[in-house]
Image (cartoon, rainbow over all chains, first blue to last red; front, top):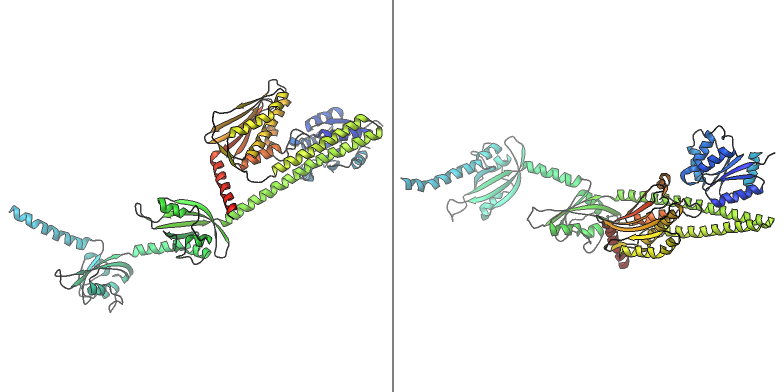
Length: 125
Length: 496
């Protein structure tokens, strides 16, 4: 079994750093992106096994990126774990989406590390 | 021959005029003797009351069979004084008619007894119905009307007024409207008595049940031009319901803003918590692995997020600071000099030139020095950040002060990285930041809030890589109004 690859998308450098250390320490390879545009490019290039996506970034680029992932035949199978600062944002996202499937998992910040790791293990394997 | 003509002419002219007058005056004329007989009447009289020959005046005027209870000609026969009286009669078609009679004595000789009375009667039926219409209008119109005399006593008040304020006639208006014992300050009626012009103002009074009544009042003079003004009519619209609605809307918006702010705050705090969580995790992992580089990295993350907490709390406090600016008359240029002193070195260290562009003189203006200082600090530090982010050499930040058509303008411009369209849309919204972990997203929001509290507005012009220009515009008129209001409320605070 090859090592699984996770793409971390967040505009908070500290959160990117933390998730990177957390996932690398659990034996995953981590790719980083600081906004939705970069995230989409790296998803296409690297074809990660899972994506963690912050949806409270400026320009709603997290939401945009998620839509693009769902619209792309080559990327829509990748499970997405959403992280958000405010539950309202997620509710708004859920209520506004059209023909977009719900994300594989959803966590509200601050995230408990073991909960996140358990969910990721379950999704990837 | 010629001379005789000249003697006769005036007499004939006089006769002519009398005859014509008697028949052509636009009202009814009749001559009545002591026994109520109509002995002479003009054409208008006959047209109006019908045939009078050989009839008693009461039979002609009112179609009665005996003298009226109150006969004005009786009193003229008694004392020789002219009487003016109004009465209701019946015209020749049996229709009720309102008229005003003017009754004068007639004597055959200058010192003799009064032989007849001359009754000149004007029909006022038309005027009466106008009066009735006016009375209905006066009472039924859905606003308060009060006629006020020079002593500020209410001479007349309409139904709506009496319903809200109770029995008010002959009481002082200030006592009725506001339960005061002396004239209200800023009284529109007083101004109208003084200059005869229309004056308006918004007031809060107290109804008869002690309820607050907000009303917009218009005071107009009740006098023909050039006459001394004896009365002022005050017409007031009750805006209590509107005021309540306005208040409710503002309250709802305020709560909405509070909700948004709290949500935004929660969001910022959650991100900081994530950072702390991360730092803690990395430090403990570094300790477990004995990896000093990792420990340092985690420790720095912890420090960064503690600092973020501090600046978030500081910004949040300045955002939630009192609602009203504390205005003082100050020189706008002084505020700019303070900012330059503060940022000169910081800018120079980054190779940025900080310039000022001040006109020779700008009059003092009522401003909140702390508030404007906060605004300029936010704008200048943003401009310096934008210069540092840009690629170009020779960056500069210019603080400019101008006065355009009674509007005071503070301008902060830079030739740094600029702002793209998406960001510009959100630049003044809660907790929006492009600085990732560095910004709290409260700087421009607070700036806009302070500018709006000054009655001003803030606008931004920018394109990516072309720098940005922020303008804070303060109309002097509004500043002055705010200043007067705030000093007034201070005075009333003191007098309490």
